[in-house]
Image 1 (cartoon, rainbow, N blue to C red):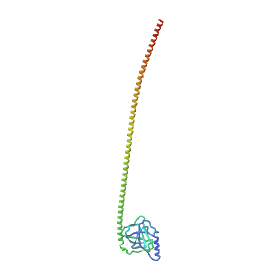
Image 2: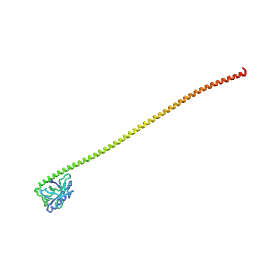
Image 3: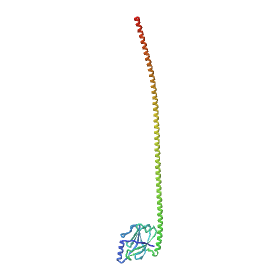
Image 4: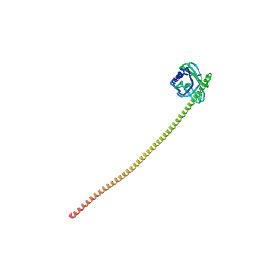
Length: 292
């Protein structure tokens, strides 16, 4: 089974067809070019945007005035997704180009022959303006359909293998991402744990320092209280001594006052006695003198 294509006929291709048709000849399609770029083709193109290889036409037939069937074998070591196809004339002119911005047409595996079978619409060209030129190793057209079926089966199996490989790659990438995330989380937890332990140590040291300062303040307060008590006891003793000294002074003063009073009374009595004796003496003298 062939893949139907509705390519864009290029201006260069039309010019080449007009040149040959003006002489009564047909333009010859000799090669198929494959590339990897995906885009919307235009009629201004003169070549593929990312051509990888070109292969000679291996076989073909005209299905109708507007549809031709082409086959080719893509061989060689190159492996790539086919996203653009060019149909080349004998002089290398790009007759028509097909591409799609997002969809790939097929996959060319490495070192594996891939059968290319396309139904090419040439409705935009004059009738019988192009012919197909097969290479010397042309394919038997009767085998084109079975070979195409085998090729599609092979490509399908390869695509399935590639999809499985892509899935394995995605799983490996996800596992790697999970491992990296786990490693980052473990590192983050270790960092946070270390930070928490550091803060705990700092807080413990801070609390210990606060406790030590509180104990020092309490001891200082107790020492000051003891100093005050000692000062109070000393003042009390000093006041007691002063009080005792004052009492002794009062007692001495009272004794002195009593002595003074006694001495005063004695002196007064003595004076009175002396006065009385003096008066008595004078009286006696007077009596003696006067004879009284």
